[in-house]
Length: 136
Figure (cartoon, rainbow, N blue to C red):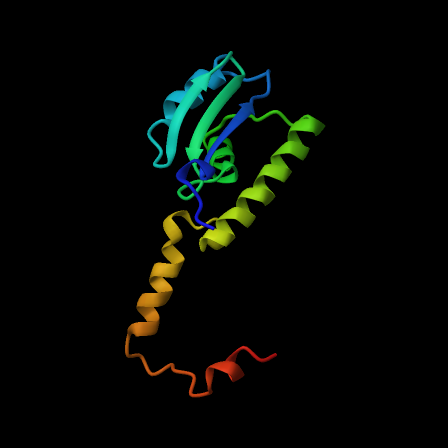
């Protein structure tokens, strides 16, 4: 069954924690995220509530939120938000794995390097038949 492009487009909400030096965290994050590849649309609904639309094949919610935390934004850590966040992280990783992009690798770069390494002549070849290599 062929998937349509709309199945790869995700719409999520990110809520920020209130006490922060930047009172308009959502607006600042929206401006910052528009420059990231894979982010299609950002809309700051309020000072602490951000609506985001992105392409799952290029970026995940976990990548987005970890990037925001790295640059100093504070995400809401209420129980409901943590549960929802964990569910989205898991479901997106499963969907990316099914697409052939495991472990959150943006643009599947690890797959590209592995296939390049396998084609090179480096003397590190396993001489066993294919069915023995995967036997454990």
